Image 1 (spheres, rainbow, N blue to C red):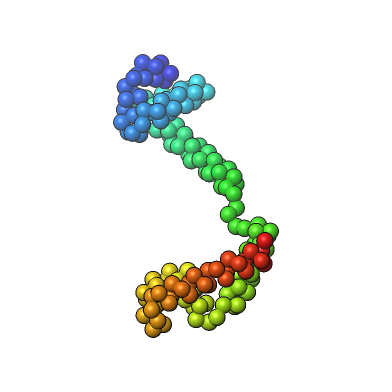
Image 2 (cartoon, rainbow, N blue to C red; image 1 turned 90 degrees about the horizontal axis):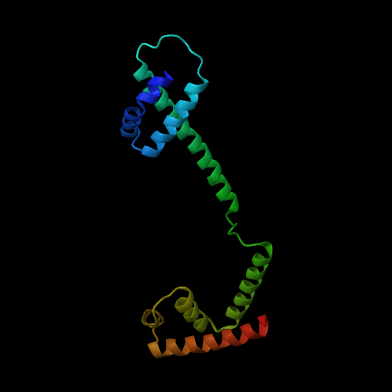
Length: 162
């Protein structure tokens, strides 16, 4: 069987490459098949030795694919364990809550119309003309209210946070 493997090596590898679609995988399978043949005890007469060798090489290729798949899963698991947790830490969460409370305090200090204009423009991304139309005021009034709200927010933020 080993002699047949050596003598028909090139043909067997060519057939295997065509069947598997990969010369590398065929080479690995040929190597594994040779190692199996070296460990194999004589079992008697094989009716179709070429078919037997080809099937043994295909089985070796299947085994190689399964090993690669298991290995890639363990590599994926290793990568997953290395991924940084994107959730905020307790400290970051506390800082964010504190900043939100400060923002809410500052917003509560604004007159209702100014607050509504500021939130619509800055948080809601509503165009100034739409705000003006909905509130039945001029676009210039919207710009003025935004400027005043912005000044107030900056000044109060500096007082409360810094």
